[in-house]
Length: 142
Image 1 (tube, rainbow, N blue to C red):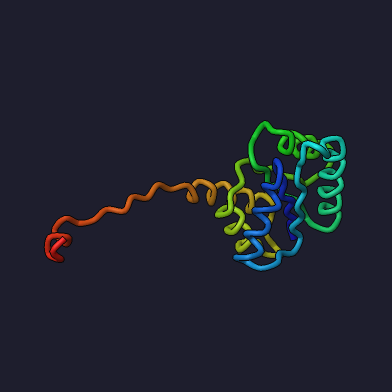
Image 2 (cartoon, helix red, strand yellow):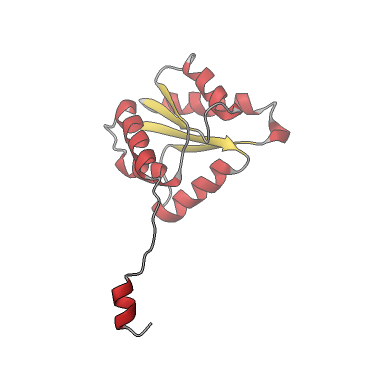
């Protein structure tokens, strides 16, 4: 199995994990490491510990971060240099996580899941417009 670690600024990861649990139920090998400013000194070690522990239990690890270039992303990227089999995704969203979590099988590879995450992230951003058909409105006396 591939383990997942979710991190981000403030309670981003905690809130996203809460939504995942509400929609898809509890998840195996899904660790959450929030980054709070008042705990900035401990954060690098907390994230490293979660990644190492997940790597020891699994065939690979995907770290999901809120945005590229921030502390959670930078710390996750540093871990890719010392822990084999770790991949990092930035720009994590709820649609992305739900798709990847429901697609993950015991035989899934990190590469497959990273590809799935990127594609789900692209498809998860849409702009919808609700329009009313004028002909229908006239027929209804509106």
